[in-house]
Amino acid sequence: MIVVLVASCDLLKTRDSETPVGGIPANPPATSAQMVIDNLTSSFANKNVNDYDKLFADTGSVKKQYIFVPTQKAAGTYSAFFSHWTRDSELNYFRKAMASVSVTFTPTVSVSGTTLTPFQADSALYSADYSFFLAPITYLGRGRFYMIPNKITGTWSIYRWEDLPSAKDSTLSWSDMKGQFSQ
Image 1 (cartoon, helix red, strand yellow):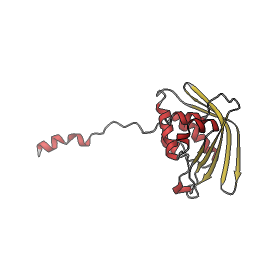
Image 2 (cartoon, helix red, strand yellow):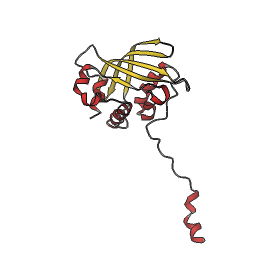
Image 3 (spheres, one colour):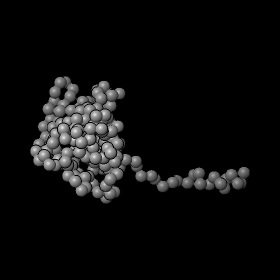
Image 4 (cartoon, helix red, strand yellow):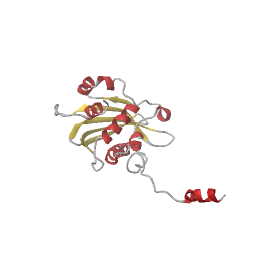
């Protein structure tokens, strides 16, 4: 009995807390289409895969399958990846991209020239020019994000993302980055 008591003394000790998986703590629920874009930018700044995952439509909750439409150039260059792009592909590239930068580096996504167009009773199209800095490269283009709310939770998610090239044809787009980190 004494041996059991001595051996089990550490059972009641508190242990050190663990670092959360997936980066800095969670974004607030995206209760508007604008908040989806805000959460997109902070998911990258915080390198948080769990927050990034919440941005995309889930067939179980909104009955829409997530679709990514790359630029024509990237579709040709990375056809093996983009011909079967899924929500899982989206998360895998994100993980690889975030793992490629140092712990102290903060990826930066900036949007400008934004328009938010509600259509139908429950959908919205958010268009914006983007600049995405992931050391040492800046990716430029225009994104079209088609969003839908979950009628039960009231949170919005992206069900279709179309990537358009920048006016500067020689620049790399977000599609190029997704292709590069899908290899």
